[in-house]
Image (cartoon, rainbow, N blue to C red; front, top):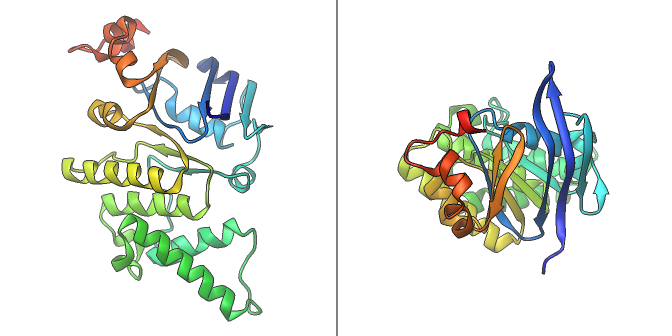
Length: 257
């Protein structure tokens, strides 16, 4: 059995008196490809914000690779091997595609470029950036301004930037949001291929149940900040509580949770 790379223990977070994450606990095994599902307002993105340091929890622990990172600043969680692609792309629109990835490669090395940076080092960074762009199919767009890319390609660039940070755990917040059906399935195939080739643990948020049940090893269902259920796709599809409040023909989760 694989060791846990992430443990969330009794995690809680409120905003203006509204409890968004409520005493939440679960574990993610190293090498796992898993999904987090639930309706709008279930706490999914807030959970990612807590794990990556964009929010500080009111209570509880977030154990990543044996270290409690609850409340740790985002740049510090990145250096520990935790990266994220955002629901709304987090790229530099006035920089080229290549420059976005190069910047992330430099960040991973915990250094800044200056006039004394050896040319060989610059060459190595650019080679690495091109390798990452090739892995997501954006090599031909390397010199384009990122802000001019189509939405689907901006999402791919966001994933490329996250990969440049060489994560052990990659969080993907709705990686197919806003894409056409063809783009969604192409992105799903890419995510699965990257997971298989890079051996990186991936947890993603997704609303498309065909995608969730198509590639996930494990699914976790959030309901108003609580863990309603977790298990394999087969276990979740046969879970009567999940069927009643979420997977039925007319999902009633907002009322039932």
